[in-house]
Image: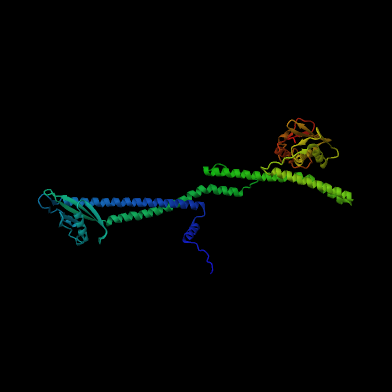
Length: 469
């Protein structure tokens, strides 16, 4: 037995067909909704209007019949013991589909053969039921006919005469059908205009959305500072504000990534330079085993430093991830850091601490990354000495990095910790202006701070405040 593939049912096929026929654009969907709503409204109004028109035409026909019956009743004499039909000035009155009964006896009927046919039987039925009644018959050969019975009381005996009048409804029905057809034509025109105007209005309303789409396509998320703005309708203004906030977050993330890349390259430059220098020195001429082991040790130390730099900066870059707590011995860490830097021959580095057992409440690698840019800048601009002094304070640990160089220009102190800023880019020293901002950011990430003391002279002094270990 072979398995048959399941065939979709009629409902599924209908749903799939409707899905294919549904408009793909928002303007098309809104126009279709407006057209559907207008169609339902037009159908309801058309039905109500034509119902009212037909009822009005029917009342007009009844009024015509009652008028005729009253005119015929004026020719009936009911003063004597018998009902008599007087001679009317216009004998043609009795030829216009009029029946006169005395009690249940037919006195007069239309002279036309067509009227004396089936209509006479209907008139007999109306008289037999008594009272003032009307009935419509659609079975007549000449079309629909309306018959109404009008009693005429007998003054002597009280027995009533009855006048039955008939009226051809074809003109009234024709007028009603013409109005119905005109309503359908008017509905079609109105729906076409509604659809066209809705598409035009929705297109104009969505034009700002298209403009915003083109703007978002051409703008650069990194370099452009353009904004969608609020000079739009209220709904689009809120959308523009949301998109502006989203662009700000994207730009912030991209700036953070660029800053992290720049900081990594800035911090990795020194250990990489040590590795390259050691390899060049080792390859310059044949070396002994001791020289090779020393080179390997330097390279291994530089590699560990690079790994520590990467771990420290990447951990700090993870937003919402707190810095791993730790404890660092301040004096050995500062001495190790000073020994790893290439100090000019003219500059002497002095590292001292108030207490040899002084500890900071951060990891040693993070302490190096905070102090390293300050010490590197001091060595770059110092004339003869650099002093690194650590001491305990009432709320933690303070490390001062002091040099006897030219100091920081007063005009530059406000931009000292801004990324990419240098007091004199043409001073002959390499640097990207990232070290000080990085040191402050890392210090603040553990609850510390990096400050410049502008009152210190000569030279420059930077103070690092860190939590105690």
